[in-house]
Amino acid sequence: MKRLLVTALVGLSVALPAAAQFQKPEDAIKYRKAAFTVMAAHFGRIGAMSAGKVPFDAAAAAANAEIVATMSKLPYSAFGEGTGTGETRAKPEIWTNRAKFDAAAAKMQEEVTKLNVAAKGGNFDAIKTAFGAAGQSCKGCHDDFRKE
Image (cartoon, rainbow, N blue to C red; front, side, top):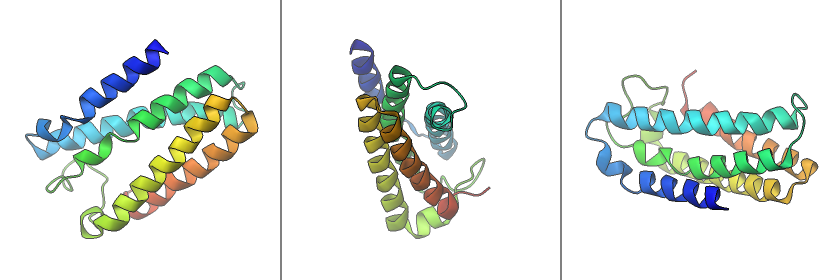
């Protein structure tokens, strides 16, 4: 429980002042890329369990899902104006169709929250189902808003 609280507090302490920290567009790009990288690493660990590539560990799934849920909220403050060029795979559609992008981000966060709830329950089948839905929400955003 302490670890969860510390993770949440660190996440909030980073997220709240994040926008003020971006003195240059490349700072915002680095920030969001780092957040997505951490999120993907922990999401992938749950995926490996879901796919049977590693043994299922309910505690590990729950810990990883909690990190994914926390990280899912961080990158979006770093999609400000001027951050669509440089070392980024962000498509221009993020800024030209911001409502759709914001809706996709909200959908992903909703599905990740469901994954987190399922993981806390420890039921493999529920985790696997929630993981699939979360993965589809990620894919939808990548298809529309991320360059390959």
